[in-house]
Structure formats: C-alpha cells, structure tokens
Length: 241
Image 1 (tube, rainbow, N blue to C red):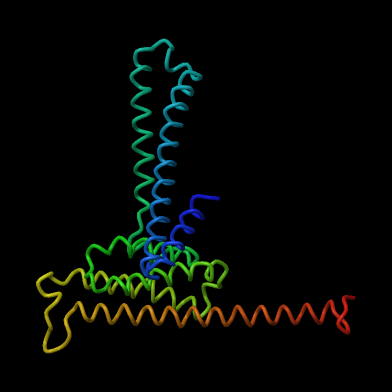
Image 2: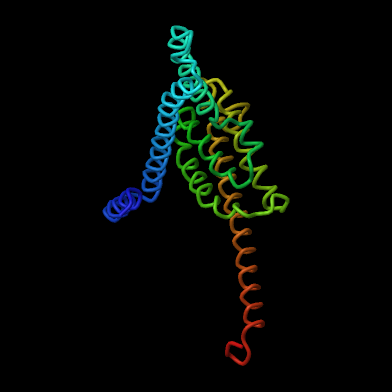
C-alpha cells in the first residue's frame, strides 16, 4: 500500500470514530502539502548534488582543473559549484505562487495555484473565517480534474478564472490591508470587515459550487450523447454488428 493510501485509510478510520469532515479534509490537505514540500526539497538536493559532480567532471574533461593553471582551476571549480547551487535555489524558490501568477497561470493549474496561495494566507485571516476557507479549498481540489481539458474560452471557464483567479485574491488581499484594530469593528453602522469577509467567502464558495455543477451537467450530457452515438453506430436490434 502506498504511503498516501495508508494515510487516507488511517484518516478514514479516525473519521469513523468522531473526526469531523472538515477536520478530515484538513488532515488530507496537510499531508499532501507536506508530501509536495518533501518532493520539492528532494529535487533541489538532487540537482545540487548533480551540479557538485558534473561541474568538476566537466572541468577535468576540458583540462581546466588540473591543466597548466591548476591552482586557478582548483579555485574556479568550487566557485562554479556555488554559483550553480545559488542558481538552483533561486529558480526553485522563485516559483512561489503570487497574485500575479494566479492571474496568468493556465486554466488547468488555476485551482492548485489558488489553493496554494490561499493556504499561505490562513495565518493572516480570522479564525472564524477558517471554515469558509476550508470549504473553498475543498472546492478547488475537486474542481481541478474538471478543468484539465476544458476550453479556456468557455463561459464557465471565464467565470471561474475571474472568480478564483481575480476576485478571491483581491478579497483576501483587501481584508489584509485593513488595520488589525479595525477588522472587527462595525464601520459606518454596517457590519465589520471580518463579517464582510466571511460573507464574501461564503458567496464565492457557493458560486464555485454552482459553476462546478454546470460543468458536471455538461460532462454528463456529453457522456450521454457519446453513449447514444456508440449505440446507434455499433448496435442493431440490441446486438453488436
């Protein structure tokens, strides 16, 4: 049994003994996030080890390490390795998702990138908004397979890009700009910024759900049409031709 399957089996067992659905989903996301982090670190370490081996070998092959100017080669080799390590770390860590990358990322990667960005915003958002964040992240995870082959110019695709690629990040960033002392105070006789945030997150969650339903209905219609086509093409009087 794979580690992820073993972990999910443990979570399911604990769920049967009183763990709520929200807590179960949070545990699964935490496990997946930790696994992605470990894989990313392993890739970085692997690239650094490869650079430490390939660069000296390449310099020896070119005759630069122990050639006429051997002392210079012995100094250049460690410097070249250090430069390569710095480049690997820079290009590996600079891929961190930002609001700008969310706006421009491919549609198929949009749910995962938005989920990654939103998860990093948790510590800066109120505890009372965490259930709404959990719900949205669960929606994003379920939405990802539906967008893999979706036409980006489809109406639902354009609405999803605007909703989770623009409006959601703008909402969260706008709340974070409000001074902490004012976040929980009613403004101008209306609700507090915290209350407005929770209501807006709930609205976004519901709208993502409606768009998911529309996409699912389209998939079901396409499946039914294809099934009918196959029946008409290959069946006659209930028998295969």
